[in-house]
Image (tube, rainbow, N blue to C red; front, side):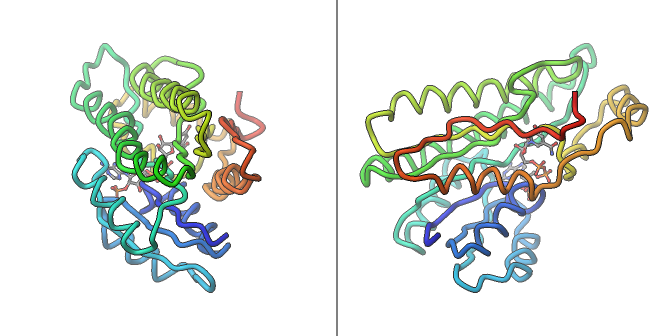
Length: 243
Ligand code: NJP
């Protein structure tokens, strides 16, 4: 692809793997996250024989920084074909433990970060009547379990917002996709501070083999590389032994 893709949460996990996949396929890739030194390392690591990689330090909870990210990508490559709103965090906790700061963070990053991404690219995509916005939801955006109330709430929210957007832009050539991964081996669980959740995790360790980030990158690539008239609105990818 000669497409230009902007990826948030590109400093690790799913975002990093997706950046690598698209760069290897010849896309122009803009990597965004807060940890600039990691973005630098990833840029140096990825071989980009056909494509080109740029990095932009971005906090998705800042409207201004998200707009600057979009402006930077357009200046660098002339246009944005794909935005992958992928940054997110998952500090699972039981509601009774009142981890209110963590609730705030999840709302800010997982919901508002996605909305700021949409706001930053939608006028550009409407103007050229083309483009694709993808967002990482979750299987937790389809079901809720004890300790995932707030996380699931954020992932349900973005999935429904993407569906609403899909309906609003149905008459245009803009496409939207929610990617809903099951368990993927990444740094995501590092954000969990609730001791009860952590000890439950330890007890259930080994009952399931998580996916690799590359498995999700393949799903993103599949959705993006359909013919223009095909809009893959939702992809759910679980490890086959996840209940
Ligand atoms: O996790 P991780 P994943 N501004 O921790 C970035 C969803 N998901 O790849 O800013 C900008 O390796 C952070 O960058 P940095 C999940 O909910 C996962 O698994 O440098 N970026 C890093 O690059 C999330 O939406 C699983 O710290 C911010 C990235 O986010 C997406 O997959 C299952 C940021 C997180 O990378 C990627 O997560 C599922 C901010 N304010 C859904 N805050 C799974 N792994 O099992 C964080 O269903 N980031």
